[in-house]
Image (cartoon, rainbow, N blue to C red; front, side, top):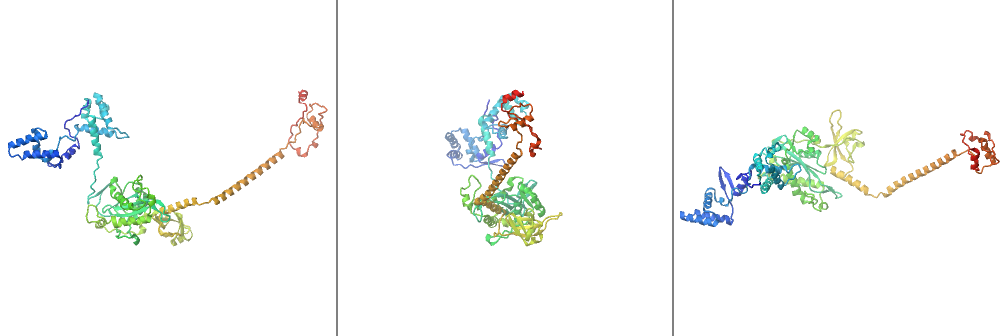
Length: 632
């Protein structure tokens, strides 16, 4: 039995807010303040008739006005009097309010939760139960009657005793009510509420080890990386190399960009270390960067906050934090990195979208001519980003604080003067390469390039370690090889030989070597290859000829050494002398005029065959039938 109303007038969670929204009311100290902005004819008609009643000069006129209002609105005089009372108590906005239960479901709170929980259960573990199936499930449960009290259903209705009793009696909401409840729940879950932003002061960052309250500059730095939405080209061949990665470091208190690293290598621990090194050191740029302001932000933070990627948990970053004395923290939630994620979006949309080769964030919606219009090199992009960070982003007003730039906010809340590090102290941030042997004239080989430096002359024949900046590998830092538990010591700087470029990244070098390998495959080497094949064919032909000669010689030798010396007993065309030899060896053979046998002395046998093994002599037979008859 399906009933539309299971609990009359029951309000459900969240429905009071819906009703208050319809009424436009706000509860303040138990009194309802209502305000309704509507100029519809229906609402204005109510206002006119109620106003005529209120403005009536006497009781008779008031009575007549009420009768006219009831006639005009199609209501009873009692309803009109109640409308007047509500207007005098709560205001004219009550004239726009219809039924008090409008927007509510006439079911109990337990039924509402039971239907919602059933819907949630049907959307987990890969299931996708629709609204109708939920209503069918209610019908199925109601058909069980008293069986619902068994242990099988105890846990299901533990929190819903009222639902259990209704189902036993055969009562349950209609399919329309089930649809409305589920749709209302889905609408509330999918409702998007914009975050107003963090307050100017008292901001916090939730980490896996607790909450950090942001209070001053260089207290908390955040670092993250992304792949930029632009294609870059080689500065010589103008061919597309690929999309670059950027690793960015930001100060949480001021929102300033502290440092960054740009390269083709996929973001890892060494890229993080290089960006961190750039952030710690004071930054000086040549006039070619055309900067209007100075990038005065540097120092070491108290905390470095990152997400939970493996590169932020590396042994390399642990060594850096131990040496420089800052603590590492991991974000508790992805939303805690909103500060740095926002600037990634700004870089793509406010800077890169102006240049050819911009790909956009969606692969499906990538411009068709992105590859054809690519025009920026890695060096050009770096200069563009430096100008954007220094002259634009850091110079912007800090959000929610008027007339206070980000850079000014950073300078105003420095508790201590930032420490200036020597570059050699930060070589730990540079990637360590494999060991290399020092060759003559103080040279070493690395990455297919030859490096040379006067500082290595005294280390010829010894192994050293190399550190380098992936952004520019034309210069390497040489250190002695650690031995006997002693750390390596700085030797000097070595530079690439036979290169005219002033700057070359590791990614560009790898791309150049790849292009050279591809070009080598495209070169017409047919004459060289044919000459190699000709040599192989001639060698193989000589080998075959030699094998053929050897085979003939072996056959000839075998024929001569295995030639038979045995005489046949009865050769077809045997002479009398040959037949005599056979008769001597076989005395039982018949002695005829045709088969006269003479003995042969050993002296008559050739000397070469005396030592040979005696073979059974062959017998020549003229008439085989006669031979069988005579010898049977």
